[in-house]
Length: 313
Image (cartoon, rainbow, N blue to C red; front, side):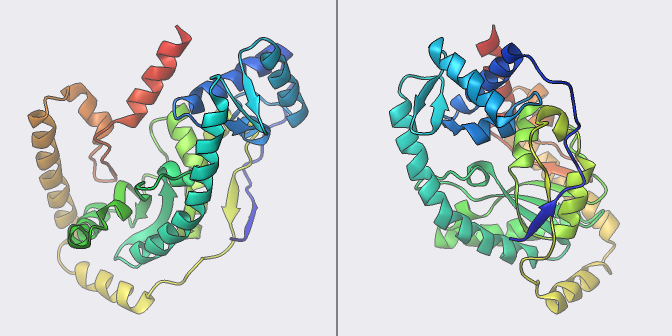
C-alpha cells in the first residue's frame, strides 16, 4: 500500500530524563505483556508515551535488563522470564497473520461494496500483526452520515448467512461510526493503541479525515508517525453500490435509521440483563447512538485498563 507521511507531525519537545524513558518503556512492555506479546525496540519506541529516540530507548532497556525488570531474547523484550516461549508464540502468530491479513483485506473489500460503507479497516489482533489458528477478523467501519444503522443492519443480515458456511468469525463488524462522529470519545491508552494500529482496507479519503480528527493520539504516542493513504486499494462496484444507496434513500432513511437503532438497543439491553452484567458497564461495552455503534460484549477496554491500574498499585 502506498502511503505518505501524515500532516500530524510529532511536536519537538525537550529531552526526557533517562528515568522517565525507562518508566515509559517498562509501561509499554507491561501493556503488551497483558497479551503475552514481546516487542522489539522500534515497537517500544513507537508506543512510548514520552518523546525519545531509538538510542535512548535502547539505553533504557539495557538498564532495565540490569535491574532484572526486563528480559531479552533475540531482538525482543518483555517483563516475564518465560520470554523464549513468548517469542516463539509471537513469531508463529506473525507468520500466520501474513496470510490471514491478506484474506481479511479481501473480505474488507467485499464489505466496502455494501451501501453507505465509506471506510473499512482491520482492527483487533490482526492489526497488530498477530494471529491464532482460529482468530476472528475484526473490522472498524465508517458509514455515511445518518445511515449507520441501515448500513449495519444490512451487513449483519448478511452475516447471519455466513453462519451456514461457518464463516461468521471472518465478519466481526463490532464498531461503526458515521462521518459526523469521526472523533472517538474515549481518549485513553487502549483506544489510542487500537487507532494507530488500524489497517486501512478501503475508503482512504475518509480514513485520512478520521486520522486527522483523532490527532489526540499523538499525546499518547509522540514518537509514532501517523500515516495518510494516497490512493484507494480497490475500486468498489460503484454502479451497484450507488444504485442500492439511491433506492434505500427513498424509504425515509432518517426514520428507518432511528428505528433500527432503537430496535437494536432494546435487543442488546435485554441480552445484557439476561446475563446479569452490571448495567453501568453497558454504555461502554454497547455504545448505541445515531452516530456510533459499538458491540463489545467482552468489554476488553475496561478489562485492559483495570489490569494496568492494578499492576501500578
